Length: 254
Image (cartoon, rainbow, N blue to C red; front, side, top):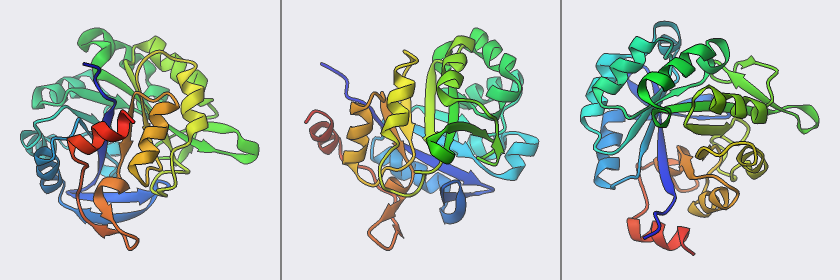
């Protein structure tokens, strides 16, 4: 039996709360992350990505106490990203039950850490989180620090280097599309797909399930979304949701 592509909710943490952003800005509180994890458990989600975007994580590293509480409620594979900058922190996250760790800023500032983590824990557990913004004339640039710092790096070359350093998967986020619910940046997905052979998780812009199918058709191995799975209706009422397994099979095998 051919395994269908993964459909992955993304939880953004800020402090003790679950938030949602648009274009990495306009942070809106949407609830308690542990309650959301419980609902996604009941919905049998394929996987979960948890990203801590709070200033505290960037300054002090992961909140292991809060993450431990969250991990105990998760019975699906979970990837964590946010403020990871030492091998000890990676080891602690795996001990808590996380199966993957994502590197974003560290991938640019301390790339040797990514290579070391890959050698110690295996490439399949190391994710390169690449945030991309479109500049003037359509030029693409990798951003770090929650989209605040420009790097001057081309995302295709950056993805290739991340894989060479040991990343076994790429979380590819379009900052411009994120939270807009108007579809993924398919050209970006196609460009990175042509450059690397590891799985790509497309993120940023899903407004309907068909958008996720389009991303997978463009070359993504999985599609991730935040707004699609926490909001409902035109007024964006908060409703944690996930499609049924039958609906996913029909959509992705159509």
